[in-house]
Image 1 (cartoon, rainbow, N blue to C red):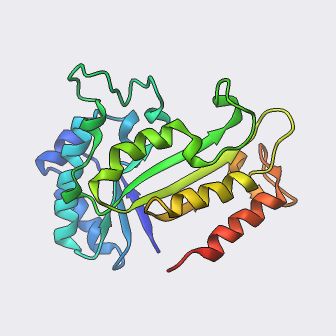
Image 2: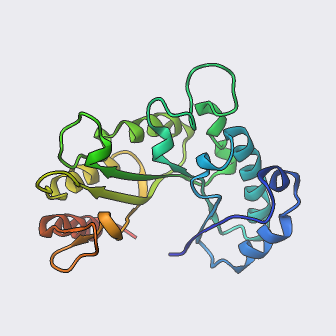
Image 3: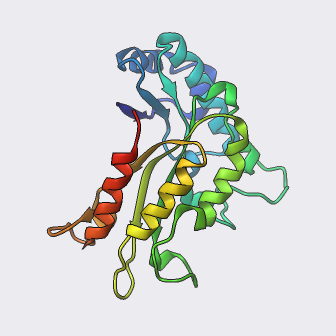
Amino acid sequence: MLWYSFKTSCTPAGVAAGTCDTEIQNIATAMPAGSYLTYNHEPENDMTGVQFVAAFQRVYTVAKAANSTLNVVPIYMSYQWRSGSTGVTNNGTGGDREIQDWLVPAAYADAYGLDLYWQASTRGSEPDDPVSVDADPRMIRWYNAVSGLGKPLTLPEWGIDDDQGTRASRGSAIRASRTWLTSHDFHIIAYWQLDNWYLGTSTVPAGGYADPDGVAACQELVAAATP
């Protein structure tokens, strides 16, 4: 399966106005049938919700017209879905970064995705142990926003790193996450095998640590997947 994320030479306003239609068409027609396409992966750092939705709707319309077999999917950034974030707000001020401003309408999305990275040192006063995704308030805030839109959900980037004290295995967190994800309409799950998030049993990159049971849990998740 191919999943391709892209940006254009146009600003989000330019994309929404159709200025980059040719770029979008060229990318869409080059994609294999049934593959996944994302415009401006993790947009919360780059624009407002209103700008993103307008641009994404144009991308969806143009890409699907060029290649109807594509799955065109917005992917959001869990960091900006944390409580108190200025990137994704929920204060009722009527600004253009409120939760509702970020939601691409279901008519313009074939699924929804979230990139989620857990790290002990960023968890405040919470326990220094890897946790299941349903214990992460960023995931739940995002899930509550998109789950009612009636589309499949995806976790295209997922990483867990216990970077404090004795580094605990990620096995139990992965197994608990698998149970929750498969019962909450997540169709695609991809573990981010790089840097601190790396799952290995012996040689690991700088920042990573050996985690045989984490590897076993990830292998169990893969083995249980259905095509």
